[in-house]
Structure formats: C-alpha cells, structure tokens
Image (cartoon, rainbow, N blue to C red; front, side, top):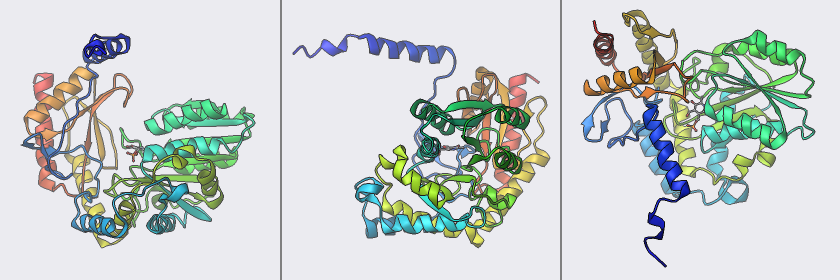
Length: 413
Ligand SMILES: Cc1ncc(COP(=O)(O)O)c(C=O)c1O
C-alpha cells in the first residue's frame, strides 16, 4: 500500500480546511487554551497567571479541599470507573444515595419526586425532551422551546422532532402572549414547554410562575433547566424552585453539577412515573456509561456544603459582588444587562469588537473570552463576565477599572 496515499487532500479533508478558513474569515474560530492549575479565580493559563472571570464555578467549590478529599475517598472505595451503563451493571449504591439526596432538595416543589443522575447536563436535557416526547407515539406532541435556550434543549427538541415527529415551536424571549397564542390553537395531546431557568448568556431569570400557570391552563409539562440557578438560588441553594416557592407535578426540573456544585454531572427531578419512564426509554441515559461512582460520592459532599453554612456564606459573598457590580460598573457607551445572577454580560455587538475587548483584557491579565454566534444571536457578541464566591471585592473593583480602560481604548476616548 502506498504510505502517501492519504496525504493528498481528499474531498472531506479539503472541505474541512475550507470550512475552517471560512470560520477564520468570519472571526468565528474558537481557540482551546489549557489551564495548568485547578479551576479557581487566578489560574495559570499556558504559563501566565490570569484573573479569571469566565468559569461557572459560582460557589468556588471546584477546588474545595473537602471535595478533593471526597473524590479521592470515593475512588478508593468505589474504584476509578463504573464499567457499564446504569441498566447493565454501572449503577452503584452511591449513585442511588446521590439521587435520593437530589430528590430531597426538590421534595417541597415536586410531589412524589424522584431524581435521575446523568454524566452531563447536555445528556440530561436530551433525555428529558426526547424521552418525554416519546410518551406519545401517535404524533400528537408539541414542544415549545424558548428562543434563547441552551444548545442542549435546542438539540433535544430537534432530536425529539426527528424521532417522534413532534411539532416544534420556538417562542421569542419572554414573549408569553406568543406562547399562549400558539398553545390555544394547538390540537396536540401532549404539550411540553422547555426553558432555561436562568439564561446562560444573559443571566436573566425566566418567568417560571407565569409559565407554570400557562402550563396548567393548557395541560402542558414544564421543563426547567436550572443549570445556572442550582446551588446559587434559594436560601439553601436548592435552586430556582426554592427561591420562587413553586410546586407542581408538571415541573421537570433539571440541574447541572459541574457549575455551582463544582464537580460534574447533572440530574432530572420529576414525578416518579416520569423518571421511571426515562429509565425505560430515555435513549441518551440508557446508552451511556454511568459516571464514575467516585463522582457521585464527591457530589454528596458538595450538596452538603451547598445547603450548609459554607454554602450560605458563599452565596452571601456572591451577592455582595453582584451588588457591587450593579451599583458601580458604569460604562460610557457599552451596554450592561441588569442581572441578579453571577452572570454579567457586556454586549458589544460585532465579533470584531468582542475579540478586540477580549484581547485587551488578556493583555491586562484577565481571562474573559469573547462569546460569539452561534452561542449568542448574530450581532450580540459579548463579554460574559462571571463571578465566583472566591473572588474578592478587590478583584471585582480592579476588574471594573480595567474594563473602563478597555472601553475607552476601543471607543477612542
Ligand atoms: C443552561 C445550560 N444547560 C445545560 C448545560 C449543559 O450542562 P453540562 O455542561 O453539564 O453538559 C449548560 C452548560 O454547559 C447550560 O448552560
């Protein structure tokens, strides 16, 4: 065989090269950077120590000594890997314990609640939407998905449409009258509304109480993806449902565990019959190797921290930083979204401006990547600034000074 045969560009390879050069031309090519130290507020990134304001480690637990110990302890007790999917032989007693604890967190909000643990939030969202849509195989399913939903809810909706012929409807951001209007004339027997509890790129909170009232009026299920609220919202950090004090069997609550909980994974909490159905029919759940039991062991420690004094103090610190930013960050011309969450976007518009701002910040020792389409709508490229409880007031004050300087450099004043 000619060893050089595959070196000549063939069709697929030429296509990949061309597509990547198009991304370069559009200023949409993304770059992988590697960290050399644990996730924290001042990591070493490719040899330089930076001030990071970009992780989702809101409570600063990713490098918490108790969780590191717990992960090591879990590995000693349960080994390195799970060995199989949950329904074959990968479901450990500690997965079960974690699920019980997660269910307890939502027990005041979802009657007869049961939790199901997943390797990632992406997988949980795919499973929730496709699995629930599969409850009705006669084609009478409609999924209503909010326009600014996370990619995993969007992809779950697309997959459900392909697998079950569900009709899909995208409703504009917070446009509940549009949602109601479409539901009114919808003959589908099974209706599912899916929404981010906290919008990941804007930091605003979805109107869950109003959505729940609509779900009741039109006999729909309400999927709430609280990836960014779990651990952060509510007195005990149980998330958005706790903060709003809502309860309903119609709610399918999804939380992720790689953000405020500091480790990795995700879960769905819902009425026990919905969860049992997902165990039976949720393809992304069924056909994935279970997450290592050691992760579940460490997550139980994380949940204890979240609802205990340590978690409360961390939420207080976060709140202090958010208030400081809201009160004192004033740009000359850039837009700031009013968010009560640790996600604080600065909308810059073009890809070029967002990249320029990120570059100047990098030169000043800050790690805040430019967020561009398709993660955000075209024309709304931005800096997505995120706070962690491990940031100090001084860190945020210095960030604000640097941002003002960068703004002036870019707009030329
Ligand atoms: C709103 C939202 N849902 C789901 C996910 C996916 O979670 P995971 O990273 O655990 O796959 C993310 C982020 O990653 C998110 O921001």
